[in-house]
Image: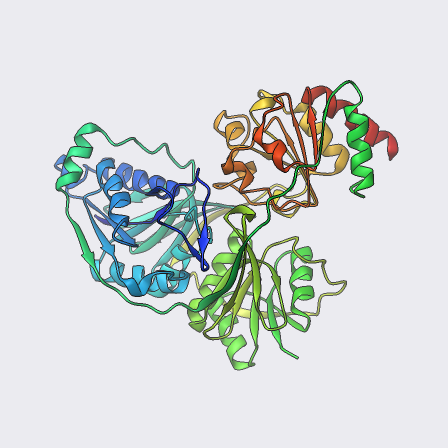
Length: 256
Length: 268
């Protein structure tokens, strides 16, 4: 199997994030691998391990990480390689700074089409943009089956089929499709592994190819304003009357 | 006056989309391509879809079919289709617009007052998902409580509840509220991940958010700080979430919640 996993470098989700001229300020905060992409990499590794392993372990399967981002994205990609992915492609181009979902999906879809993968696995969203639409867009662009929001994935290599359990606000759907497909996985599908020392050392030698790309966004940010910090209201110690005061507050604000 | 094509969702959310649209035609379809074609052939000025998990993906496929720009999670849309979004969990307000094709905009549930009437729904044939075989469908069992993302009131529990939801549930039910949780409560295995509010969970913006035993990591704040009223109950007076509370109580949450539930029930 040739598997592609899309990954993104994002500002650390535990840090304060800033917008400068409507774009994410990626310089002032630590750049990390998007948390949710780790579940996608882990799932790809497990699928390979259940079928004889990746080429790293003497098997025949490969996992290629595909990322669009600044040169710095290589740091995030390196983490995925140290988890056990085989190689990586980073699409870096000044023209892509500030790319929206339309442009991002165009660039990623092209790289995926060029690589001829059996299927793609993505995290369900990035923790900075939080749109969760890029996997659906890639699948629509490539005409590949869309198997998104999966909390369970199983792959039958011999018949080239993937089944997932899709879980959304409206319920759960068990679905199946032939390769090629675009899968997105939700948090908690698995417990992503920590890179081992051996994995970290091996990742240093793995290939990251950098290519350029271009695409046009379909949206523009007109203005972005930091929200004024919210002032704290009243704070009381419970002396036995807090419940009553709380109810009075709710009545005052017309909430009950 | 501009013409907006609204993709139907549940009745309440559809009514909200219709209200935001002003002049709307409502369609229902399994095919994003069919919706896109209808929008193009009938010269619609914009397409509105609900910003739910399913809605956003459907909207994304419409945008691809139209080769249009798409904006997700708008909380307001003006008559020129300039949208307002709240980014990074409400720390920034962003205004944006689509500059290519027929704008496709998804609107967060609860952002506008629903319209009193929904125009008759037009059904469009087709299904884009012919590559996928559906094996089984398990619709979500509607609980007695409202959906987290759509609720007017949310009561959430964190590490401080110590695995015991009874006081939180009692209070939530006295208010007709949805229940949420912090990542700590989810990671401890006290509830399922679909209740998680925060950076990697749901973003909510209810009229009232009551945080019980939640200290307030940035992770959690990102999912709730745009709530209109925030009540924080925590035994730790230093809990950072107090900084954004309209009403904060330092005390034992089980006793405060239980008494407050009785007082609220007595008012009914």
